[in-house]
Length: 61
Image 1 (cartoon, one colour):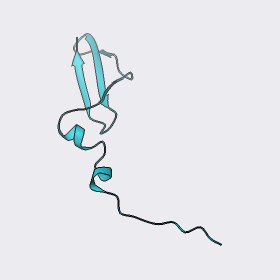
Image 2 (cartoon, rainbow, N blue to C red):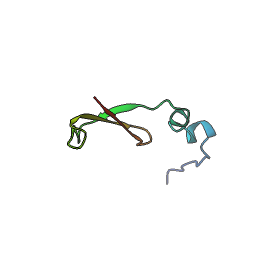
Image 3 (cartoon, rainbow, N blue to C red):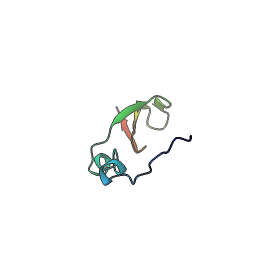
């Protein structure tokens, strides 16, 4: 006999998991190590990328 799989609609909580935090400004920042030195500014540049939504934030020191 075949195994029967029950399909169900995802609940709104499951559907929006991980998206609502970024919309409200609570990003999960991780350092992006591709680029470290900016020639134009002549200083170190750190790129932060959000793990959930992919937004990039840059800081220069």
